[in-house]
Length: 215
Image (cartoon, rainbow, N blue to C red; front, side, top):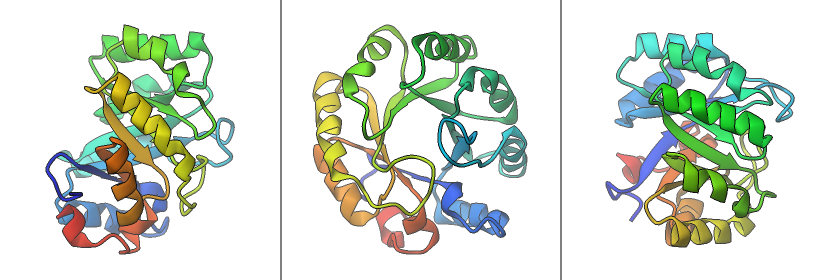
């Protein structure tokens, strides 16, 4: 089931050894997976700091065929959309918890750039915050956080699964992605509720996700 062509895997470089990032990216390339997930954090929207546009540009410049899925966990994503687009982002995901003004401004930037666009929600956020955007903007996917964002290696929060089911029923054509605590078991649960895209961190880089799952 999880090896189906309909299932998408996105290794999150945040979970890799920070002193060995080049080999981590090489592992993604060798796996045959064609994309990588970049968690961008500012220390305000989430309690951690990660990568900037320069890192994305370096990855894109060295591995131009690797699709960059950029998850902006930022208080002001609108200030960073253009730099990440210039760095080679193929898709930019922002959070629906931000103010309507900031989300709308960011969506306009992405629409004008013809960039694939995603919206994310945290575990405590009700799905109805997404509805106005999903019904009025060209949203490529919804990313449902299945851990509290900020740090890799957390346990999967099963209570978010009904959100996946609700979104799948209401918006059957939108790709639903789960992020956090994903391994073969939790991805199987997510798949049963309607998710078809999974961000994998520790389970991928530490070898807990069997290669036959995604190869």
